[in-house]
Amino acid sequence: QVQLVESGGGLVQAGGSLRLSCAASRSIFMFNVMGWYRQAPGNERELVAGITSGGNTNYADSVKGRFTISRDNAKNTVYLQMNSLKPEDTAVYYCNAAVLRYTGRSDYWGQGTQVTVSS
Image 1 (cartoon, rainbow, N blue to C red):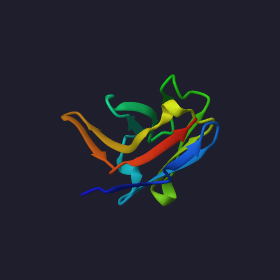
Image 2 (cartoon, rainbow, N blue to C red):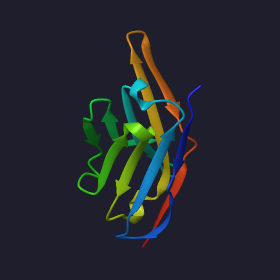
Image 3 (spheres, rainbow, N blue to C red):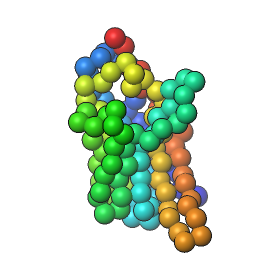
Image 4 (cartoon, rainbow, N blue to C red):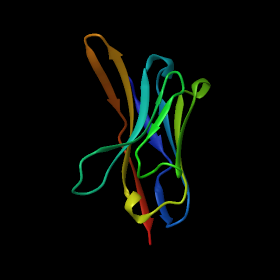
């Protein structure tokens, strides 16, 4: 069983920064893609940023230029550096890891970490 443990959330003023961490219980080489999702009250969960095993990244339009996803394979950890935070970034942020097989996709999720941005 894979465990993903997020940390780094909290309360920050608009314009501030936070760095989220997602530590995996196993080598992250086993995952084809890892990413961060977020869910605000009343909204669906949405993809914020993703990174493949090869290091390719993608971002939601709303965070491009402000957020950076990265991975440290030696530490089995994925990070999300969030700069220039806005109140609309307030949400629970979830770490995701996915294994892609010809039979389908297996997803693993962390428990979530709250990010609150005050205006």
